[in-house]
Length: 170
Image 1 (spheres, rainbow, N blue to C red):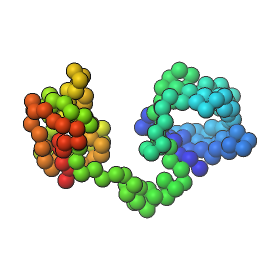
Image 2: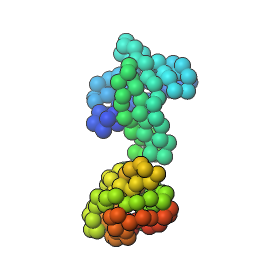
Image 3: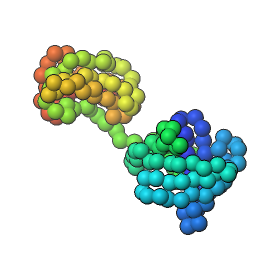
Image 4: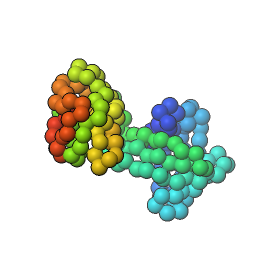
């Protein structure tokens, strides 16, 4: 049994049988079933409830179990969970697999153009932290995980070296 969250709000729960290329399940409590054909590693054709769907896999993140797919030319973000993910969630152990990051380091030498957070701020994974100019390009450094800003180790307008600590998390 797989649980697939679509664009963060719709949920497809399905049993997928790869040997006979069939699936059945529920999409927002409505029953769905059909079959699929693999065209190549990044393209599939689905026949679901007598409707045809062309699926192109645009991006895969195996670590986070996410996909970006185009279904009939419309993009969708998918979050996949299998029975083991569901079990870890029910036991309250699902957040143990997330990496604990203690600091953000400069990925390259550059100039700090702007600091978008302050000490004590709570940030979520993906939030913008710093704008760093390197090789005449502005790079937005984002938070690698959820956390609290313990210390900002640099100032705006200062040159930094590669691997220099910029922000520390508590």
